Image 1: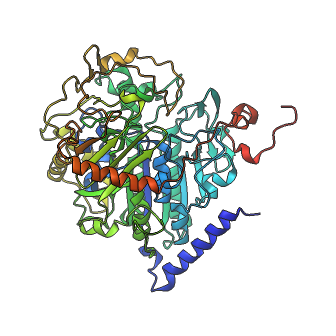
Image 2: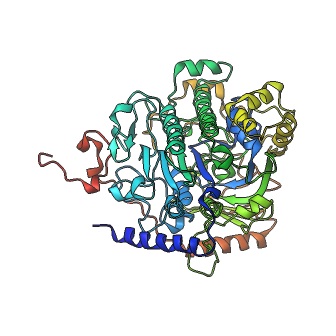
Image 3: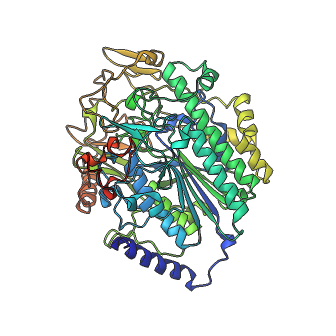
Length: 608
């Protein structure tokens, strides 16, 4: 018997479909294909189009320069909250997903009464497919991707996996986590995750082109494992021969990170090329986004960079929530001429924005004094016309368990509380930048010669070296001088200096966990951020003038601070309690042939 919430969802989706066709409905061939590529744990400073020169990302950069680079784009600070925001269009405080991540043995998931992006698009006639990471719950079958709007799913259900053996170590338990729809994909053991997922995505595109009429649009949600770290025994898994290509990158862990990023970029190129070969690229929207800021300097055993932004993943500083992202489509640009989009944009905006792009006609309700429909704003027309969106503020999160919250209104941001007792509140490199110098000829040639760059040229939307140079200069975040006590090459504290070249000897024995013990810190942090201690008092920043959050203006503008805190209180009044639950012993993979399984639908063997 169908779950009650599923029946309600089906009824609502039927009404949505009727509303979308009641007036002169557009022909389906006018609906764009939507390819959403979600990178995991990619830092602000880990893409070339933001000025990073250390690791080439030519395919990602090519699409960025041909599309809209989202300069003021915000995600949430962690995996599960961002994915819930993307799929529902709602702030995590409105779905109970605001505190830390969802663990594999927790008996919960994204609430079943929430309609998800693939369900909205399916009601508009889309074929919907998911590849890669889910991380929104699976303790019962009905929480998994193919029960929540996706026609198919190849990937994993937990928050991370080893890229070769596809197991996940979590809370002291270990088990295989790779699924083909609901079945365990035993046959994929030993095959590199990024390659597995890329092949699946390419095959979906080819199959869609071959087996569907041109009237059927495609929604492909491609959520990479990269750049998330793997299990503690191999935190940055990648083939050695790929690592050797980056022998000039300083620091062993950053070198391995570079190799992983190379595979991610290669994947973007292959997907773009597959769309061109299928004659679908010209009719597509491609979104590229990180899910949160990068885990830098050993955080989560990783080696990302958010430089020059402050903070890391799972902090509410700009380095934790300002996302690397862009949207590419011939529907958005004039003859392929890209631009830097300065509009304020939040991850919750994707659902209503893409729904409108897909020719949906639902009027989204985000009025503060009305019942919540979604928190995201439909920004499609504003992106097309390069006009202001309706969004004027971004709630970064409110977590009353951590005791932290942050909000941006216009140019102003308030920080209240922090995570890890402030031990990850600094600035972490490497800078890996060439200052304000024009991009090198090698960089320009790499972008133009990449698979993505060539694909754009093949459909009559070629990039130019002049446009690339101009746009790259416009995306730079340039803070005047390095903060005292910090180094662009690492962490330069009052007592300890740690450079990236030393990360090869870095060891961190604590059990792998996105929600690390707040007493755990691999490096000493200096007291150079004393002017802003959000554990003692809220801090106020003008993030347009001071994107690196170095100048706390709380004492200078007490009225502005009071207004911002009052608005935070308004948001908090609408929050529902976090849905986190204790780990359920039935979730132990050992009980299910060492696989992470939907244990809520299973009966334990009698001999256990």
